[in-house]
Image (cartoon, one colour):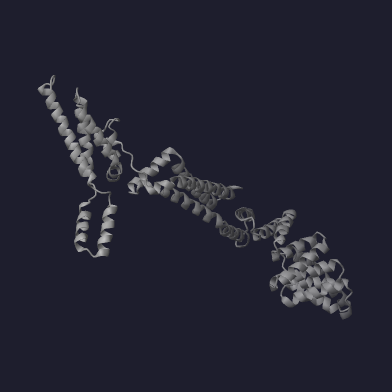
Length: 456
C-alpha cells in the first residue's frame, strides 16, 4: 500500500498475530461448558438414545459430554492476557487497519458473552494486586453474576437488624433488672457478659469497621461470599435466641436470689437482714410475679419492727393466695385491733391449706381473734382444734387459758393446766409467747398463793 513503510507493515503483522492469539484463546474458552453443566441438547439426545436403545447414539453423546470440559483458570487467564497484548499493540499503532478494529470489536463482544464463565472460574479481584490493570482494561473488571442465594440478601439484612435490635432491647431490660438498686457480683457479671455480646454483634453488623472484620473472618473460614449475609443473620439470630432464653430464665434466677435471701435470714447464727432484703428485692425485680419474696420481705420487716412495710408485703402476697401470708397478715391485724379483717383472712387461709403446721397457726390466730371479739365458744373450738394438731406448742394453750378465764370457766384446774402447758412450751424468743410467759407465771403464782393458806 502507498505510504506504508516496512516498519508499519511489521507493526500490523504483530497486531494481527496478537488478534489471532486472542481469537484462538477465546475460541478455546467458548468451547468449554459452565462448571458442572451439560448442554441441553446433549441431555435431550441422551434421553432419546436411552428410550430408543440406540447404543451407537449413546456412545456419541457420551463422547460429546466428555469433550465438554469446564474452563480452567489457565484458559481464562490466557484469554485476558491475550486481550492485554492486543490492547498494547493497538496503543502503539499510529495507523490501525479498519479490518483489525472490526475483528477486535467482534472478539470483545464474544468475550463479554463469556462473563459468567470467567467470573465463576476466576476471582478477578485477586489478580488486580499482581497485574495492577488500568481502569480502561474493562476485561479485568467483569462483575460476577448474581448468585441465586444473593437475591434474598435484602431480607437477611432486615432480619439481622431486627434480631440485633430485639437483642439490644432485651439486654437493656435484663441489665436494668440486675443493676437496679446497686449491682451484686452475680448480677454485674451476667449484665456485663450479655451487654458485651450484644454490643460486639451490633458493632460487627451495623458499623463499617465491624462489617470489614466479619468479611475477613468469613474469608479465612472459606465461607462463600454469597452466604455472608445468611451467616451474619444466623449470628444475630443466635444472639437473639440467647437473649430470649436468658430472659425466660429470669424466674429461675429469681429463685436463686430468694434462696440466697433465705440463707441470710435463717441459716446464719447472726441473720444478715439488710443483705436478705436486697436479695428478696432482686428476686422481685427479676420476676415481678414471684409472690414468695413478698412474704419473706414481710417476715424480715416484721423482725425489724417496720410494721407498715411488713403489712404492705403481706397484702401483696395474699392477693395471689399465698397461704402462709394469710396467717401473718391476720396476726398483724389482730395486733392492730382489726379483728374482723383478721378473722376473714384467717378463715380464707384455712380454706386454702391442708398443711397441718400452717393450719395450727391459722386456728391459733383465729381463736385469738374470736377471743378479742368476745366470741368465746368459737375461740375455744378453734384453739382446741389447734391443740389437737400439735400438743407441744405453747400459743394455743396460752390463749385457751385466757378464753376460759374470760368465759367464766368454773373448772379452775382446767385453766391452770393450760397455763402450765403454756409456761412449759413457750419460748422467750417469740414476742407473743414472751408476754404470755409472764402472764402464765402471774396466774400460776396467784393460784398457788390461794392454795397455801388452805394447806396450813
